[in-house]
Image (cartoon, rainbow, N blue to C red):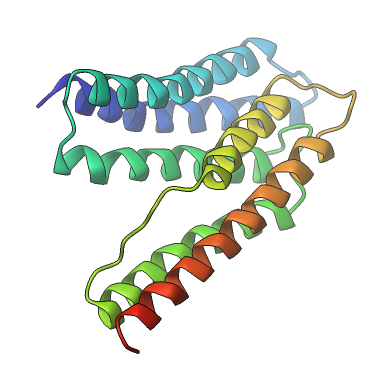
Length: 189
């Protein structure tokens, strides 16, 4: 197993640690005695996991460590980290929480993308997913929104990074929909 894949697996293993820290911090807030050390640890673990995403990608490209396993694990690790962060910060007593519609929108987009990929694969024979810059900006904005909440930045409010992320998530969703329609039409369906 190459170094890039080891870093990806490390990122996956950080997810339950992050969730545990968020849950315990949320409980401490609800009990009226916020344990700020837990907030700081949760922020550090999330930041480490987010940075490891860039690091494993750079290592895979720089040292020609791209692999089929990495092509599966890396996006899986990204989705698991982002979705667990959204859900944990929305439903654990964390302050400030994300608005309920925000994790639902991101989850819907991800589930719809996976479903569409299977549909395109079935109808067109092979789904060709081309990364688009709006998808990368969505991920970056989502990381900023999560860190905004973790760091308890109050001015400007959490709604601003949420709205920026939402804008790019919707935009990239439409781009991927139109690309999927193009692939289906090109296959003659």
